[in-house]
Image (cartoon, rainbow, N blue to C red; front, side, top):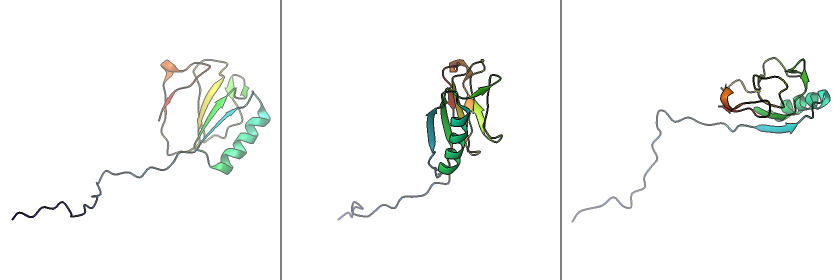
Length: 111
């Protein structure tokens, strides 16, 4: 009589290339071109430990986003008068701007 292994429990095997993923914390806000709102966003971002900020109507000074700390990576279209931006605050996240699909009203990144 043949014995089958149907009732044996299988134990999952760990693979050498298995990565653990950390959750990404995101905030989305419309700053209405306000410097004060930008300052409040920076405080909130630090408290919440956000990784990515999606911003509509950012505060601009001389056609550039202002009020962001230097280590933050700011992505906008390469045109003037940007009305959208994505800010990466986490150094572990790599991003590339997709310039062909970005314009002053939208920003597209590949993470």
